[in-house]
Length: 368
Image (tube, rainbow, N blue to C red):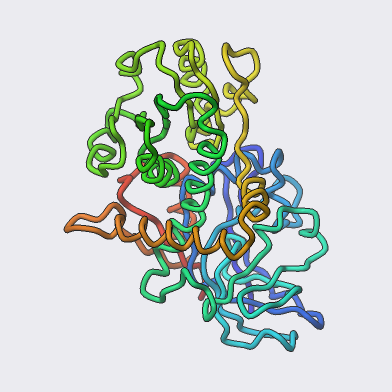
C-alpha cells in the first residue's frame, strides 16, 4: 500500500505538489491510521504561515528540504496495529498530516484518548498530540463529523479567546468594544458568538464589503463594518482588537486611530500577502500586538478548574454553538465534500487565495 501526501513549499505557500510513497513499516507499539476526512480552512493557512515560528512544520516532517506538510484536523480509522491497546477499526479524532494515512505511536492510553509518543513530537504542545477515541468522546456524534472537522478546533480557539479576554477583564475595556477582523472567518464568528454573551461588550465585526451581508446574516455581531468604515467606531472608545487577518496595514490603522486600545491580540494570518507587513506588532502606537497561543490558556484553565470541569464547560459551549450553526432554513455553514488528491490540491489553492463563499466549509478525503 502507499500513502498520498500534499506537500507545500515553506517559502511559497502557493507552490504545491502531490507525493505518493510506500507505507512505512510499523515498529512494535505503532499503529497506522487511514485518514478518512479532514477540514481545510484559513486556520490551516495560518499553520503554514507561522510554520517556522510556531513549529507547525515539525509535527509531520516531509523529509524533503524546503517542503512541508500542513497539519489538519479530522477523523481516521486504525487500519493496522502493533499496539495491544489500540484495535484495528477504532475511530479517532485529532491532528493529522494532509495525507491519506499516518503512523502514530500511542502512549499514555486512557479510555478517552492517547498521546502520540513519537520522539519528534515530544517537545511540541501536548494539545496537538492527543487523539480522542470517538467511542468515549463527549463531543462526538457520527452525523456531525464534517462539522466537527471544520469547527471543533476553531471553536476551541474561539472559546479560549473569549475566556482569555474575560479572565483579564478585557484589559480595562469593559464596558467597551471588541473589534474582530476577518469577521467572516469561522474562528472570528465563533469568538463573536461567545463575546456576544458578555455584558458590556459591543462586538464589531470588520470584513470586506463583499462579505458584509454574510456576517450580518449570522446575527452574532452587534455591528458589521467594511474595513473602510472603521471611522464609524468612536476613536475614544475603550476597545480590544482581535486580529484574525494578519493584515499589517489594518493593524496599524487600528492602533493609530484608537487612543483607548487596551489590548491587541494576533490570532492568525488569513491575509498571507500581508504577513511580512504585520510583523510582531513593533513600532505601533498603543499596546504591543501579542500572539494569542491557545495551549497556554488551556493549561491555565485546566489548572484553575481541573481537567473535568474544563471539559464540561467546553462541551456545553460547543453544543450551544453547533445548535446555532445548524439552526433555521439557512445554516451558517454548508459542507462541501472533496475526494481524491487532485481535489485536495485544488481546494487548498482556493482556500489559500481566499476565494469562495464564506458559508462553505471544505472537507477532504485523500484516502483511496
